[in-house]
Every structure is written in structure tokens, then in C-alpha cells.
Image 1 (cartoon, rainbow, N blue to C red):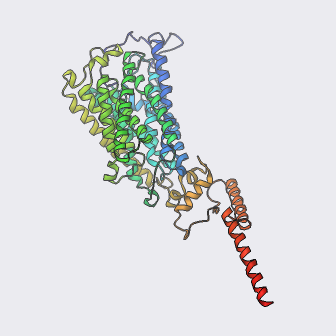
Image 2 (cartoon, one colour):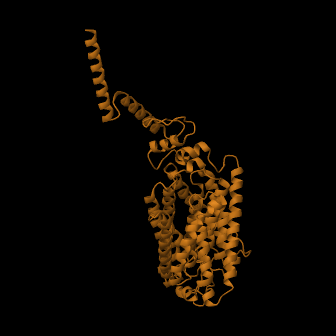
Image 3 (cartoon, rainbow, N blue to C red):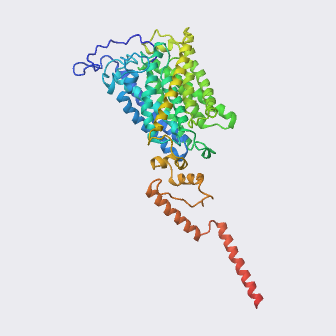
Length: 525
């Protein structure tokens, strides 16, 4: 939390460099069990955001790359769990580093992380805090790897994920949430991750997309999401998890957590309605994808602000976020960067809007609802005018750092033999599911038909029943089955008419031939 704690309910007296010794003392005695249970449940709720992002991205992609989006998001979670345990938590939240930029390895491998009060809040122990913050990093990584959609190789993206979390996410989290970070020291207000989570993911995805390059233009005709039901399912899971994301950032079962949940819902719904209205003015249709995009944009904007502002300010925030993020989807066309899933428009811009709102509408009366920070000062409404400059500084610094560092990491990985970021043009035409996984979310034949429809080698369209099989792609047993079915269909069509109309035409032809034969015989007679 980016505000000064005024003291814990009780004083921690644990001994030992590990944060207490459970063999000699009860390490639970300094914390409320209700607070610990609440944060543990909130962490599990945040975990549901990972499959939520997976379903969202899978639905937004085309069917031949749907499974690859599930894989990269879920595998990124595995990478982050290791990275966070290994050194991620220490680099972001070590209390012994005072350089203002990044932590040290004091908590390497979760050393000295037990019952010591966490650096984020004295209400919960460091062990619980580290677990909760790991979920934040995991969700941010899931959002970022969406940049690989439909053209990126999956293994290099996982290498990027590890080093990105180390060199981008951890420093950004240190800036705003660690008491020794430069942004924290200057009073920057970021409740649940406007800088490290939203700007970090949105701007980093933009940088990765820039290094990766645009998708094949020939394949972009009539592009649209392939499964809106999956998009809706992913959005609902994200919404549920986001209540743990924002509500849990109060670090206790208190009124501030309730207010954060209220503000999150208000912002999300008003952003959704705004987005739908903006889409309706152009298409004269009520878009379900528009509702999902607006909801996510509102939740993003609420992330840095929901624990600082009042409900009426959340309504205004929702409308502003819906407008800004909706028009933000046009930026990728202006700068010619193929941000295919609009990660920057929804997360980068949404996070910036929420941080700006903190500068104007953050209120000490809301911050003090946690029972710990009763003397905290908000933003413009509390007479804290200088906060506007520091909020803008955090936005600019976070955006610039995330873009430059992410681009450098991606470019270095791309130069390593065997880790080229982009798949071949043939693989892009075929689809990432077949090329990278040999498995599919949908029927293999549909994937092959898509490939044949776009294949530049074919001089004429394939027959509807013809399915060309290339043994090097896909599952061999599946390929053999498809080949057998194709041959059987071809032989059947040679024996049978294609339709009842063809059958009638054949009967008329046979009748005409019989009549002509009879007439010729009569003439000879």
C-alpha cells in the first residue's frame, strides 16, 4: 500500500532471523485469524483470474490458435510461481534494500519470511503477504503474454516471462509498494497495482508486440473473435477474482475491503454501459464483446483507485475509463503496432486513468476505513495538490521503463539461437495450435480447412470433401483418420449424385437418350 501505516493492533515480539520460531512460541498470536483467513481466500480468488484470462484470450483469438492462448497463460503461471519463490518476492519486497529502485536477495528462496509483519501491512504476516503478492505477479504475466497471439512461439515467451518478472514487474512493485521505493516515499497512491499490474502488463505487451511484428495482413480479412461465449466466461471469472484482487488489498476483513469491492463493481458496470453505447453508435448493435471489454476496462481503472475514492467518484471513473479505453483501441492503428488483444488499450490506459483519479478524488476518510490508517491524507479533495505531479511522474516513469526494458528483453531473447520469438509464415498460416502443440481446442478438420483456404500454394479451391494431409503437422492417428474419411467421401461421390436435383437431371438425361435412340431406329426402319 502506498501510504504510511500508523501502527498495528498489537506489537510483534517474534524472535529469530526467520521471523519467529514456531517451536518456542505461538506465531499466530500477533494476528487476527479472521484477517488471515480473508487474505488467504482473496488469494485463491485472484488465482481464478488466471483461467479467466486464458478463456478471454482464447475466445478473442481465431480457432486455430485458441489452444495456444490457453497454454501460454497457464504456463506463465507456473513460471511465475518458481520466479516468485526463487527471488521475485525478495526483489520486490525486501526491507533491507534502500536504493529506491529494486530490492536485494535478503528473502531469497523465502528466507526470513514467516511471522514477521509484512512490509505491505502490519495486519498480516510476511508469509501470507508473499503468497498473496505472488498471485498479483502471476496475473500480470498472464496479461502480458497475450501479446504472442497467433504468431509468437511459446517457449521464447516463457523465457521472456521469467526475465520480465525479474527486471520489470519487481522494480515497478518495489517503487510503489515497498516503503523504500521512490514512489512510495513521495506519497504516490496506488491501491492494488495501477503501475506494476496494469501499466506493467499493458505497456509491456505493447513492447513485445512491437518486437514481434504484425500478423500476416492476408489473414486479417474478416477477422473477429471465434468464441464470444468463452470471452464472456473469462470476463465473469476475472470479475469474481478481481473482487479478491481489490478487496484483499485492504489486507484485512474491514470496511475498506468492502468499499473497494463496491467501487470495483460500480466502476466496472458504468464502464461496460459506456463501452456498449459507444459501440452501438457505430454498428447499431448491442455488442457482447463490448460489454466484456467495458467491464474489464472498469475493473482495471478501479485497481489503483478502489481503496481510495468514494462511490460517486467511482461512477465518474467508470464512464471516463469506458470512453478512454474504447477510443484507446484505435491507438494501435496510429502507431502501427499489432496489439491484437488490446492489452494496452484496456490495461495500460485504464491503469493510467485510475491513477490520475487518485490525484483528484483520493480521500483520507476512505483510506482510514481499514482501522490502521486513520490519519492518512488523500489527494486534491483533501488539499494535497502536489500529489497530481507525483501521480503523473509515476505514470510516465512506469510506462517508459516497462516499454524500454520489455523491448530490450524481447530483442535479446530473439537474437539467441533457438529462441526466435516469431513463428514462421507457414506456421502462422497453419495456426499456432497445430504448429506449437499438435493439439486443438476444436475439430482438426476445421483447422485444416482454414489452412487450405488461406494457402497461397493452391491455384484453385479445394473440393468441399477434399482434405489434404501433411504428415509433419498434427497428430498422425488423426491425420490417418481424416485421410481415410476423405478418400471414402470421394469414392462415394463418384458413385452417387450430389443431390436430388442431380438425380432428377440424370433421369431426364437417360430418358432423352432413350427417346433419341428410338427415333433413330424408326428412321432406319
